[in-house]
Length: 331
Image (tube, rainbow, N blue to C red; front, side, top):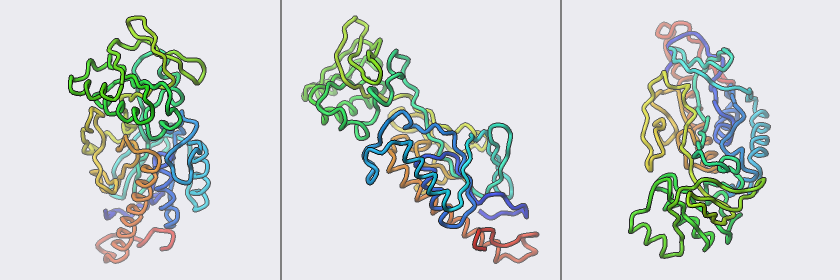
């Protein structure tokens, strides 16, 4: 990761995405006296939820409040925050050129991608309208709040059987709607029924509800099954299209989750100046996991920049024409 040009990028690191993962990375970099720009579209994956759960020290806090606090914390260390989206990233000898919506460009020595994903739900009336309230996706994030109630699981992938088993821990009134993927294998069906999980094979036509609550599911046979909440999973669409021109290696996720950018345990991609963290590469990560990944990657990126700073400072001037030495705040 050694620059070979005298052109000095504007930023030590750009963070694309300003939710839990991105702000955690920015916090570590800001505390390391790095010049950091966070570019945020303002549409985090969990924006539909009113409260976060399983987040130690922030149990019940709203996602919006977490982001507000995080933005204030990173700003205190000199991190610049900008509303916007990244549309293109190009690699140069000196680093990266990041093009934003509207055409503005920024140059950076490193890029951290924390742009998240979209949950593309099945086209069933009432499903998207109640997403984050009566329609849920994570038993660990939302299960306690619907414990002992009538809970449905809408199967969209073979993982639905596992999700139904998790939900059964929360209530003894669970219904698996299997119409989208078809009847479970006999052994799976027997396993589910062994703990009283009901299986409805008719396709779901509608989720019935009023305001933020749901009351039932209407199936193709005209029957309405009364439920108070329903868990499901949408098709996962990572927000990484702006990296397409870099031909980064990708990996097919298990359970039909789709193709995601390949990263190592530190979040580093196939490009030595680009890291990716959070749901954009780890769709099952909840808020604490995303924060931990951001803290790890922020420290790793600073370490890589430190090595580059010393490489530049120690190299003979004739070997790196125009090299000005360390470019960090404490140069």
